[in-house]
Amino acid sequence: MDLSCFKAYDLRGRVPDQLNPVLAEKIGRAYVEVTGAKKVIVGYDIRLSSPEIAEALSSGLMAAGANVFDIGLCGTEQVYFATSHYQMDGGIMVTASHNPKDHNGMKMVGPESRPISSDNGLNEIRDRVLEPFADAAEQGRYEPLEVMSAYVDHLLGYVDAGSLKPMTIVCNAGNGGAGLVIDELEQHLPFEFIKVHHQPDGHFPNGVPNPILPENRTATADAVIEQGAAMGIAWDGDYDRCFFFDENGRFIEGYYIVGLLADQFLRKTGGGKVIHDPRLTWNTLDLVKAAGGEAIESKTGHAFIKQRMRDEDAVYGGEMSAHHYFRDFAYCDSGMIPWLLVAERLCQSGQTLSSLIDARIEAYPASGEINRTIADPPKVIAAIEAKYGVGAKSVSHVDGVSIEFDDWRFNLRMSNTEPVVRLNVESRANIPLMEEKTEELLAEMDRLNKEG
Image (tube, rainbow, N blue to C red):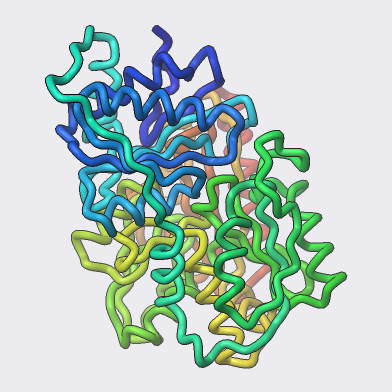
């Protein structure tokens, strides 16, 4: 049996050769045997193969003795929400996020929506799939569960409804599932939503929803300009990540959203801890300190950030990859809470999104993440560290290597999910310096790569 769909954090693979109903049923049985879960939330995304895989998964869970609570078509964060809100033993979301349309996968959590990754159960589930199974003495039962209303109530609790004012917002669900939530929220908000690629459609008629790809941003940007909207929002297919466009249709680098959300959240809580990743940091450190909070660096990746948030009881955590985590959301990531907070900030401040962001880009210009395929990543990273570490103000290994000077810094790391090296460079109020150092580092990486 091909088990290549088991990855570091979740399952992803092509349907039917890498993931299919037969394997899904066995995964359900193995999940119960490894975790001991008795009550499990199951949800699925808009992919055409998702209902069948979710049904087979549920059969396996029930055959192993667990009760299945089926929340139906949803986003990943609704599985997180339902698992913690209803105090279940675990939850499984059938989704392949932004992978190609012939792929599918699963994201698994345990009690309190704690992630199940390769180092805390996922590898055991994978290995258990290969062994024979016997049916449980008592078959689990199946129960549909409606979570949308409780979930929408929870989302609305993050903003002060009294401070919200009418404005136009473009929202692009990319034919994923986000439109269903927008339709529910719309009834409670004074905003006018311009809906782009709004209908859930697993055929992905407008391409796989992944706003990280520049070619997928045009529809949102154009609609913002055309409609004179205050901002644009776009999501990936299972809407656990959201991406922002200002009123000029400009795509906003995720790094600056982390700072903006940290600031907005700390204003509400009057302080607290904020977790951030090590790739780009200065803007976040500056804003968190000014808002009376404490910034704490964590290794990149949702399992690391969520654990660190729990350890520190942090109010908010953000990654520049557009994952945003909230203490009151079981320390999980949500693609809906961030845009509600940004909309609230626009209403309260009377400022445009571009003016809020421009000031930060000016203070801390950044390269954005640049990916390079390199034959021997550890060797190249070590050589870069040897060259640039000399005379640096600080060298850190929280994730890859971060090297800091008085007026510029960079992070170079291997991807957790792809065979690439990722570079991020930033400076203090000096765009030419940031650009010069970015070019210099890329040239050095290319030279080292050619040398092999």
